[in-house]
Length: 176
Image (cartoon, rainbow, N blue to C red):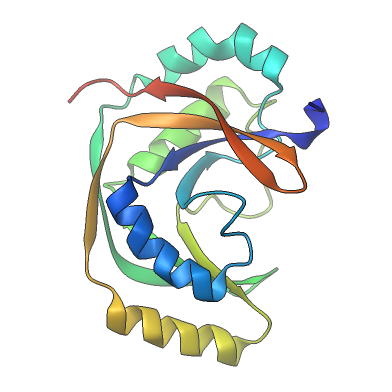
């Protein structure tokens, strides 16, 4: 496995919520078969397998500053640049941003600053035009029933080839 493929630290949606999101992703997301629905906390390339082995205990200590929390998905959002993306907005009391910021502060080489602000989200799809994006958003808004989940652990995903992602490890947040 090439270290250049990268990794990401994510929250994987539970199966019942993932099924709901995947119903839209089947229509709008060409990556549906490569990675399950998730909220990214630390974007690729994050850490190599060797670095993870060396840093895991420190990462666990860092994220344990955040207690497990409830997540509610009840609204959509969009990015229009650099890509046109439809996503679900996590109502999480700011905890995903807190996790991201804690990791960025403690591990700046692995969670570097980006020109794009960190926005926690669950991707629903990608679009070529604003019209297509807006049409899909109207459909998802009409169909969306609020979804809830408990965020109790984060998952290290490894990009193993051509955008295909695999679970490598999981770390728990502090118990509520």
